[in-house]
Length: 197
Image (cartoon, rainbow, N blue to C red):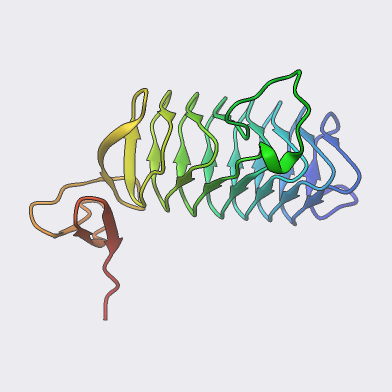
């Protein structure tokens, strides 16, 4: 480690006032701005950009070429695939100078979700816990917990286990074929793990 509790590549740019947790690694040509918050044991790839006001939890992976803008709240264990795209203004205009509260739309990525390579996440939505956004998808609305979505615009494809295995429901309950975690489906929009008693 450098003189910090985190590692910064000699060609990384870390602005004064950036808050970076213990064990995090920031690689070449990545830029972390002042007032950005990055948790512990994160991995920030080459040419990533973390803007002031962005928040990353612990154990987050930010692959190469990802820009994390203000208003993006990333919980623990999230994976941001190479060149995944985020926005924070629904109707940007360069020539209009508006106060931040008039345009900033926060986006929330919940615990353990995956954003595939080159996926685009439109601002103002929530991606649920352990959800999976397939590569190249364009996500324009909230994604439920444990849902896999794909396409443009992104549509529901299947339910997915925390371990990444596709779930198949023949009734209101099922178990993952890979890790044996049990799940229950409620209606058509909610899947939750069954906690053993």
